[in-house]
Amino acid sequence: MANLLVNTLAVVGVTFVAYVVHAIWDFVSLHFFLPTQPLRLYHRGDGPGPAYALITGGSAGIGLGVALELVRQGFGVILLGHLADELEQAKRTLVELSPSGGAEVRTVVMDARTATPKDLEELVHSLDDQALQVSILVNNVGGNPIELPPLRKMSTYSCADVDAVIAQNARFMACLTALMLPLLSRAPSRPDERSLIINMSSAGYVGSPFLAMYGATKAFNLALSRGIARELDIGRTTRHVDCLAIIPGDVRSQGNSRGVTPGAPRWDAYGRCLLRTVDGAVSRKMRDLSPYWKHDLELRAMPWLDEARLTTELTKVIKRKKDAWDEYFSKTQ
Image (cartoon, rainbow, N blue to C red; front, side, top):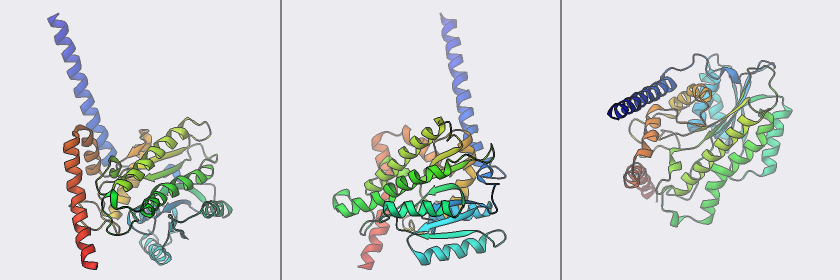
C-alpha cells in the first residue's frame, strides 16, 4: 500500500512538473519566438494589388499601430474613422513610414456610434465592387464615449451614455462582422490562403469599477469573437477563416494618455507585438490572445486571486486613471 502511494505521488509530481515546463515553454515561444514572415497566409496571390485589411478606428492609437505594422508586411489598409482630417494625417504617416513610401492606404469616414445598417451595407458592397482583396478585418474601434469625466459611477450614466457605449463598442463591431463574413469566407484561390478577423476586447472584460459599461461591451466582444471562431472552425466552407479576440491591458495611446500604468507599451509597439503573435495564437487554436507578455502574465494570474484581492488590484489601476482624468477635467471647467 505504501509503495502504491509513493508511486502515485511520484506520477502526480512528474505530471505536474511536465505541465509547468510545457506551460512555461508555450508562453515563452508564443511571445519571444516570433515568425520571420508574419501573416504570410493572409496575403493574396490572385490579383494585381496587395491584400487589404479593413481597420476600424484606424486613424489613431492601437488601430494606427496595427495599420503601420500591416503596411510594413506588404498589406494595403483601409482606415475607417469618424474624423476626416485625422484619417488623412494617418494616411500620410503610413505612406511616409512604409518601407518604400508606396503603401496602399484608403480611408472611409464613418461614425461607429451613428452608422446605419444601410451605411454598413454600402461600405461592404463598395469593397466588393472595387474588387479589393480584403483578407483581414480588424474590429478595433472602441472607447468610452460618454459625457466627461470618462471614468465615473454607473449611477451617473444617462440613457444616451449607455446607448453610445454599446453602439460604438458592440453594435458596430457585430454588424460589420456579420456583413464582412461572406466576403472573407469566399473560397481561397490557393489551399494555404486564409482570412483573418481580429476583434479588440480588453482586460476590462473582468469588470472594472468606474468603467462598468465599457467592460461589459468588451466582455460581449470577447464572447462573440469566441463563438464566431468556433462556428467558423466547424464549418466545412469556412475553416480557412481565423477569428481571434485580442485582450489588451494598459496601452499608452491618444485615447489613453492619463494615469497610464508605468511601463505600459505605446500604441505603435503594441500594434507590432499584436500582429507578430497572431500566427502563434492561430496555430495553437487559441480563441483569444493577450499579445504583450506582461499583460498576459497579469491575465493568467487573475483567476488565482480571491475577489477581495482582485477588487483591490483593479481599483488601484482604475483609481490612478480616474484621479488623473478628474484633475484634468476640473482644470478645464
